[in-house]
Length: 277
Image (tube, rainbow, N blue to C red):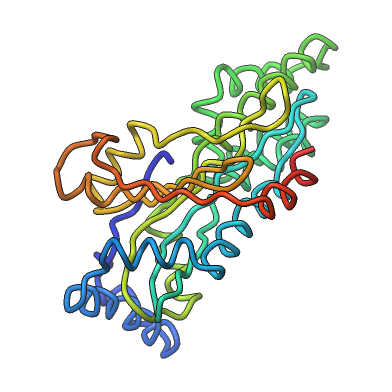
């Protein structure tokens, strides 16, 4: 994960529009009071994560990520997904927030045959400009391809740059304050607040798809700043849930301080064997 908006810190005045957004904003802001009055205990988190409903919810997140994968340059790239989580009556709810950068790079292969259309598309939004500025030499390359008929070599390089951009962007999940506010307005909120969450999907290995990555230093730094970044790591026979809230309490990005809840089952392995072929 590359960035996260501040949890439970959105000013109520932001939502002073129509009644439904105000109601949902109040629901969201009410999570803080409920959580302060009755903090979520480690035992409650463990029980919710390992319950049949929790396992199914987490499996659905990984399945969705696999279904949303793209094949670029002959390689399958699986995106991270993330959002905010709540706990209500023993059940975890993972509210997903779309990463706007993911939507941008998904369009790039479709427009690659028309360099001008691709350059105009990327130049037309803040997210597109961000991709242009970070995808090594893409802006200059597209500009060259629009000044004269592109060569076969230029098209080959463009395909490589696009594949690299997709791989880099899909490896992270980011959320802006604007996206967070939109999602708050779009969902109902109840229970107590867990915090931000994201997944680390399977990684391609020589033998197929293996475990996802452990939380990165960036993940841990965000957890310290935000109070939590529940990191769900894919395993071929289950998942590892890294509860990073203890890092925030300690004020240091030290993975040894995280609580890790592990789930394994033959049913999980059978379910994902087909999805990871």
